[in-house]
Image (cartoon, rainbow, N blue to C red; front, side):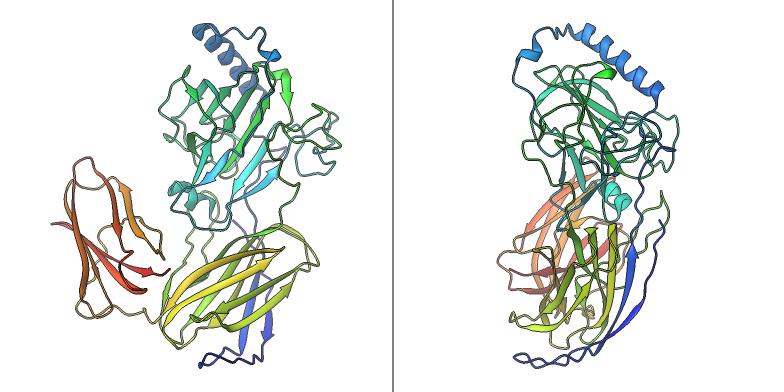
Length: 469
């Protein structure tokens, strides 16, 4: 994944009242275009041969299931909810961008999307919804789910194909097709291997039901969902769910609530110990986000943006524990981007406590909590990192979840200690199916920084956690 860096030196002279600590006097800004994998005319999502195979499979399954589509067109037309959602462990402000709409231009090589723009490629027949930032990290950690956009019957599915492709190929994608009451069909393409619902062809799903995880299987240049709608089970019955001046396929929107053509927003705001590492496809990214820092250290304050628009401004600040402003800054967009990212290096406050990084853009506010005074582990706590477990959310105000697969069976001990090394909570769990699913309530603990130790007879790990309201 390549990134274009535009480096500016910004000098700030910041007056500050109400909270006695020193403000940083300078910040280095860098960032720019965030190149995300997008299919194009040279890398189409689905080949003609694959469409022919899909149509043939649909016909065979209809016959096997004894589905009679006659008269289905007389029912109420299908309306779609959004086909993706974040899992509970992801606490970003958003998670997606639209890389391509349907190509409404029947000439070649002409392109035109439903809004008469060019957010598409020649011959594209679906809506490509990519995940961001860190698409492979999100895929590896099952952070973005594909869900049923409308109720219906599973007409076809494939779940065993390789899922980390980066370019055009003839490999079979993981996908599921849902037929609705009016006879129309929705195709959900490029999903993660072995992630699809356990339901089989012929069983029904309801709106919002889990279908799988966003992946990069088949002819794909990065994790995204290719969402395509047919009016029937025939390849030549393509529909465009988006209503607009240049939609020549159907007059009305098929969305219950159609999203705007562009959605300028800050997708994620984070405080990082180092710059995020974003290697080329298909390597997994390293976010380097942290929630605990030592007094007076430096950190990277990072925002990822969708549909950044020239002339717009972003307003950013660090908020003290007492809700006053430690420091603030702003930047004006000089270029429009589909996806972009920006980072500033800041000297952190010296007073311990719970802080907030706030980013405001296009009328929306995105925040991320972090703590000062939690950078060192008490001497009484021994640290080894033999276990690799998913602990979320962090920071948390109610409970901490530990959820992961592929671990040894046995007794797991969970201990939470404060900054003095004193045990404040402990619990145990017996694992019998190689899957750890444990929730620990921290609602009774005071706000602050703690350390969770998870150990078995053979392994042990330690994780910093932050409790805050």
